[in-house]
Length: 121
Image (cartoon, rainbow, N blue to C red; front, side, top):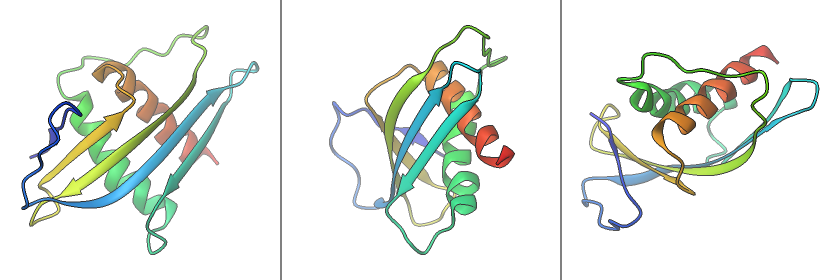
C-alpha cells in the first residue's frame, strides 16, 4: 500500500528507505508534441525499469478514484518536479513525496503523458 507524504510532515518511519530520486520534466511544444526528460540517481536501472516500476506505481496510486484524465489540445505544459520514492520491507509497500506540490489530478495527468510519450520514442 502506498502513501503520499506531505513535505510538512518530515518524519518517515525507519522501516522505509529512500530508494530513488526521480527528476521529471515535461514540455508541450507548439506543434502539440511533448518533450520528456527523466533523470534518476541509480545507474543500475534502465529507463524502462524506472518508468514501469516506479513512475508507474506512483501514477497508479495517484489515479485511484479518478474517472478520467483529460488532456486538452490547448493545455500548455512546462513543468518540472521531483519524486522521492521510498520502499518498505517489500517492494509493494512504498511511499513517495512530490515537489513542488501540484494537485493529485495534475501530477496524474503529467505522469500519464510522460509514460505514454516515453514509450512512443
